[in-house]
Image 1 (tube, rainbow, N blue to C red):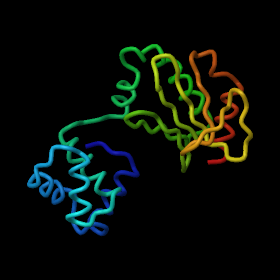
Image 2: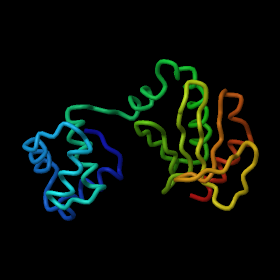
Image 3: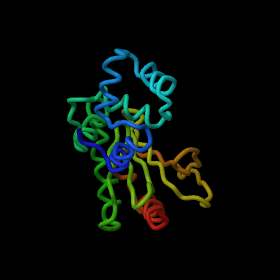
Amino acid sequence: MDVDAATQTMIDNLPARTGRELPAWFAELDAAALDRHAAAVAFLKTEHGVTHGFANLIVKLHRSQGETVTADGLVDAQYEGRKAGLRPVYERLVAAASAFGDDVEVSPKKTGVSLRRGKQFALIEAPSATRISVGINLRGVAPTARLRGATGMCTHRVDVTSVDEVDAELVGWLHDAYDRA
């Protein structure tokens, strides 16, 4: 089971925070035989007093047992089928951000790829077959027509539909976010 550093930290903290290690929780879920994710999370929370974050992690890992998910596999899954034409845009964005320094971490998840330097400074997602949405953390920067204000983990968003749109302006915003991270 390949996991990112944050997930591994949670796994390492399970015994201290929940009283059991992961295999014991897996056995508990096997015995409960709950087929829905939400029902299994609710079971851990109500019957065992596990916090939501840990319950969600335990259930997610329990359901993915035996699956080997690699970073490349996660990215491949995001850019297959109708979204395959966006892969060059993604590659250009990652190449530009990686050039900022050796400390850029490219961290693929199921639906997006976080760009991190200690903390996340950008998020690359492909919400449709025609565009990539680049979330950028630029607190205090006024939105523009292209650099739209956003809520959530990213303060701004830029939509990109072609490799040509990964231009000096966009790379500049990414570099500014990298410098702030």
